[in-house]
Length: 145
Image 1 (cartoon, one colour):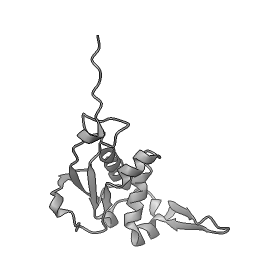
Image 2: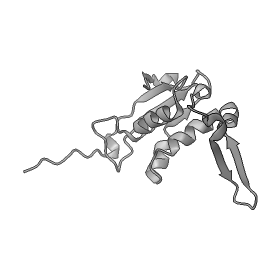
Image 3: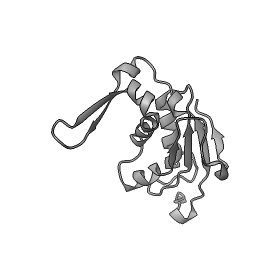
Image 4: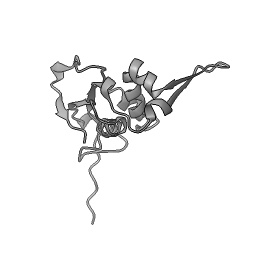
């Protein structure tokens, strides 16, 4: 007889805090690592239908790296819902004016598109500079290769 796999319950989840320095690391690598931690896939107790991920703080979002000619060619679109309400911004504009939103959008695209994904996204904190207000949580440093 086979032993059943372990399924974690939401009451049993133990959450840790991690800080990731995005300086000089490519945006996709940072986002992929963060999304994995937010989902809890780095834990042996990972359960797909439970938010078992940890809290993640991303610092130095304004110093994240983009490869190739993405600074000029990658375009971020937003639509207000009104006629002619399409707004286009290049990656260069985004990293200069809205680096936090840029990292958040990259991570959000890698999370599930449902209630669980929205819940996971709330555990992400992105900051432009090297300072963050979560010192009391004593986050451990996580490296991104």
